[in-house]
Image (tube, one colour):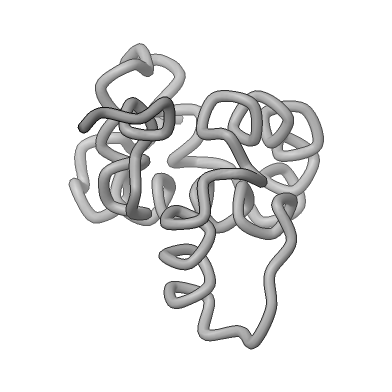
Length: 102
């Protein structure tokens, strides 16, 4: 039986997969090259999108996956959305193709 929450990713990996597919190459490059301070500032607005897009809170499976990824005892929706953003950045950097040439 399909439920409403079945359309949302249930793990950090699935959420990052979806984000990576939906982003343009230019956006991926910008994100990959953000330092920690820029990433925090970017999260202030993009985190709202992530929480709405992935139903945080409400998507208990994804919240639990974010909790495990962060190795915390408790987690807020804001922390969960930051973990998703940080994991996306890590994946992009691991690809070694999104370096800004100066």
